[in-house]
Length: 211
Image (cartoon, rainbow, N blue to C red; front, top):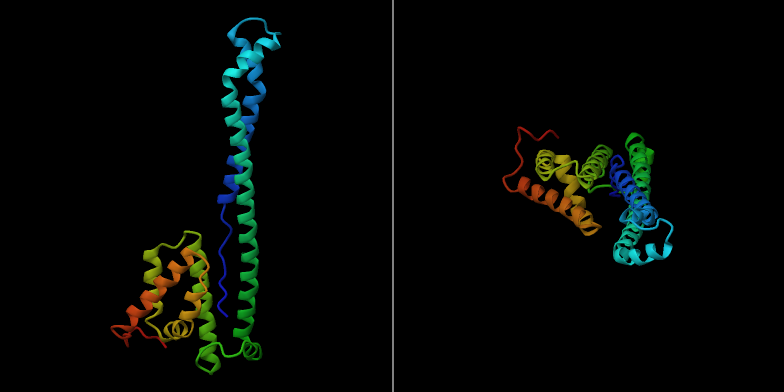
């Protein structure tokens, strides 16, 4: 039960599509007006044979523009696919978050999840669910580049000073690390694990342990 919610949609794909559209438009315009531009070299403006002969000198440039246009379309399709996938994942995370909140508020729903942590009392299980939501929020910001490594380490070190955070990570660290789906996700969980082990080494401080 370690779903992770994703943050707000990034505006990067939108800017990417606008850039691609602009590039394709400029390329098409240049190809369209190139025969007329050839008239600036002098000679009969109505001589298409002459235009054809001169056109051979910039055939490579026209081919390059066509390749750029096709490349722009391909990039646009890739960006759209990534954005669509991110939107689907975001909707799935929101549903999972709502289900967790319902379980935290009602013991009857909490029992439906089964043992959520090594502890059996409802309070500790709700704390584990809440820690899971916190880590999911951190991971969403981390994936969007809004959470630096320094900030993540500081936040994790602070969380692991308290018992609920340490208990949750002790129960779920292996599962979260093994199910990381990307290099960035693996780095995220590696940082958490390093801070968890660092918190265990000197022993938790009684002054900061809030549980």
